[in-house]
Amino acid sequence: MKSSVLFATLLISFSSFCQITVTSSDFPDGGDTVLVSVTNDFEYDYVSSGADYDWNYDALNMTEQRIDTFFDIDAASITYQLIFNNGWFDPDYQADYYTPLLNFAFPETDLVPIANPVGFTKIESDKVEIIGVGLEISGVEVPIKNEIIDIEYELPMNYGDTWESNSFFEVDLNPAFDGILRRHQERISEVDGWGEVTTPFGTFEVIRTKASLDFTDSLRISFGEITTWIELPTPSQVVYSWWAKDQKIPVLQVIAQDVGGTETITSVEYKDRYLGDVSIAESSNVQPDINLYPVPATDFINIVSTSEIQNVEIYSLTGAITTQNIWSAETGVLNVSQLVPGSYLIHITQVDGVFIEQIIIE
View 1 (cartoon, rainbow, N blue to C red):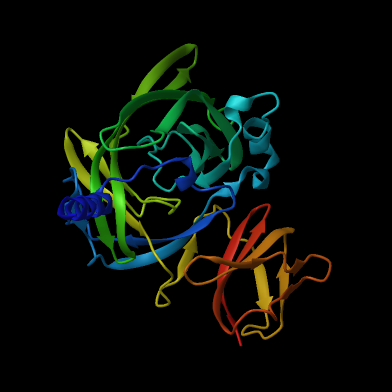
View 2 (cartoon, one colour):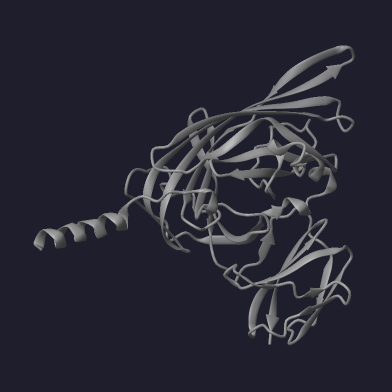
């Protein structure tokens, strides 16, 4: 009897502290949104890791918040859908969603007129792939396939896993610029820790991944009849991500530039709940022109927009969806009569962007 009790106690203790496994179900789906807090607290030790590790960052000071949207590929422009939503003829490049690349490593040159990068992601049971990017070149959307696809994560992820991925793309910058931009990327990744991480959002059982990204960027330019390739300096990146079950994004992510073996932190972000003392920014490329009235509202909200509205959703301040399909395109009216009085986030999707604003229901 004593042996059985001891065994049961050890089993419970072991199961409470064993590492998690991250699978494809722990990543976002098209249409998902998450709320992210940004901090400038770069002085913490974000590098140390290991087995059964305790990372404590509960004192992080949030400086701003935003809502990240993983746009369903059907919501992309026709230009992007022709390349990344054509599964019948090109299944390797059928994206599940796209999202703005806020930490995209641009080449350090003013010669390349590119802006507003977005990444197209494909999720399978055994891997997460970045199949391509979209760039605005002189204001024109240009879809770019990764001719060699970037494997961001190999799945399922467990402590001690490692993988490498070499990817490549090339884009013709004409007619905006007489040149060709070429990128070779080397990704070396490992699951270098597991344990518990604490942020202002809470405490989570996690595994920690480290990805080292090295970029070789070059630009082909012409001087009369002479054509030459110029190497563009792009700092390497190191990305530390703490993954928990069912959270869709890392509960904490730290990005550093690696220059000559010295890491300099450039970004610290963590999943969070809405905090009312700051404004919320949306990570889409365009902020549509939309007017809502009356606010505060009781039964109905009128929505006036200069662009066609595709979808309207209401979220609680924790980021959980509260209701959808309550928008009437014919009348331009949103029915909020069934909502409990309080504060919510309205999420309006259009062909040219996403609008997010806090509303009050009385």
